[in-house]
Length: 472
Image (tube, rainbow, N blue to C red; front, side, top):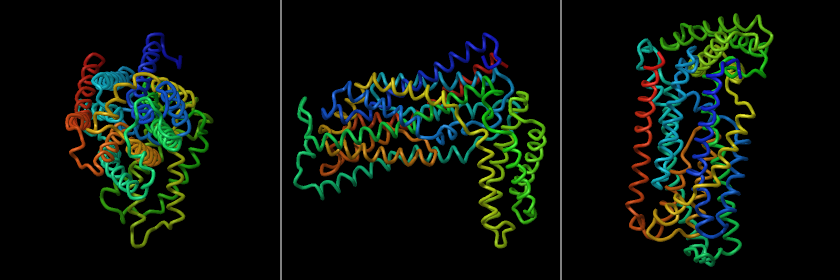
């Protein structure tokens, strides 16, 4: 399989199954948030709610793009992604998967709405830190720009969920005056009026779709890390792309870059410019003789991937500075064309096979259909001192779906759990103040929010170091 011997083929299959297990756990861990309101308010029977949510998670993964998946992959140092030693790659993969699964299961068992996003990202960050601490990797750096973007998204999104749900509840209180039943607690085992029920089902659908389009992509990114690590010749580059197209884009970038006077740039970007031009030269030399990527050796696959990623990374700040010069050597049309050519070059590395997306969507959809009870009770009864009302549930879910959907558009992973939980908390305090929140549950949510990333960094980093000791 993919040119691997029997032992490594078995390890690859085990890792792929483990990644699917992570997404399955993600399904019943995180998606319980999507079905919490419709189950708690008796808008849908539990079996119907989880099946419906599972279907929309499946759809979200399949049509939501792969921007978040690529963001997950790019959190690791570039050098770690193009390591020629299969055992080193296996150490990364096992450290990530074991940490993510163990922490997710532990928090689910305790009924804590912990974030699978925090878990996976903390694990990747931990492995990346451990990698650069290894001897000989002093010059390696993490993708700090991407890490900062992801960190801010994870930090700010719950605050957005809290305040937007709070404002939406205030708006509903001001506008909806005759339909008082929307602000009442659900009656035991009695479904709400049809119009309220329709709204709650719609918001549940939106959150389920948004969850699939964001969290599902994290699973896609994880599986792509596994495939690149085990079989770089088959998955480092998109085999459907043509070397001739990559060569044409590289030559266009090279021709445009030569119009820039390096002396007009800052010292840092002079270095970036030199590195970009050097990588363009070697990329063109490597790609020019071949008619398809399968003609390249494994070493050349890794080399081409590295060159593309470094060209994109180093040229970005150069292009930005050139655009801000008083007398820029490139006009706006040329700058746009330059960015377009680089984006097309990155397309050779930024992809996911259709079968990977389908596998993740199935695992996530099936996982949605089990294990939802613990989280539903937390969302419905343990965040506020009063039980969740129809309006509060709908407000929290509408805000969560919007926040997650926008984050997916920008390729940023966010936590469905924390956005929705904070939205419920924001909706709960309208008219009653913070005294309506159950401190114990809020404390547990905050602790999980705060400690998940540092704990998973430590666990994943330690496991990676341990595996590397055995597989030097």
